[in-house]
Length: 336
Image (cartoon, rainbow, N blue to C red; front, side, top):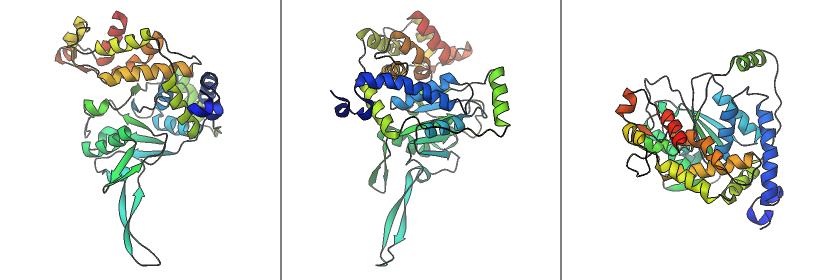
């Protein structure tokens, strides 16, 4: 199959596209590095989410440049970007758009005209998504799942590629509406944004308190992203890797015959089949970004935490023993 036929276009055939993506990854990280100091794991996981056609949930305290990171990635990839600040009074129409009464200047006839909301962009930053009521959360999550919105009985397709990154503050719970597990499952990755190291923070302070204004160079376009998302689906996977991903997800379920004893003791609900799918898609994408043509077991292990930690519901026994979902995933990886 030629590059034109399979959708990679100017990237050439699949093998050539995979090689060039590895090169593009280094250029992307170099451009992002002009603005963002450190956070290499966060940048990698965000790129994996985007190219795997998933969505990400960024969890971190305020002031860690989450918004700046997403805006920078959108600029480097020449994607349209909208930021929505989620508040308790936000309505679904504030996200999806609404119809207004408009008057034709010539005929003076009145009709309804649809005004698109901020969801009509390539990259959406849903800032503090847990601060808005479930009805408004559901409006965004429906768009994430179906890549379209319905207003007054009419359906509108969203832009392609469509990528949502939602943020949550893990330390402030007053006045929030935590996402139910069924809605958390819509996110491919739960990306934890941690504090910078001492050297990184020194560089951050030095660059952000000076007159330095970085100039970013575009690396990929929206068309390129779409072609690479299709390429990810065509990456071959060894049966050994596929079986490991399925066994890993299955082992998180306390009623599974493959679950270790500590899972039965600590877990109320485990990850569903969507986790298995994301483990494989994420492993494929990670391999491509690394310039490799097929994923390994190490690729599955590397993305197991962001895929699984928000899909495991720990029980009261685990909470009493101060055991969290990431601890459970870490132990599971060691035992498997």
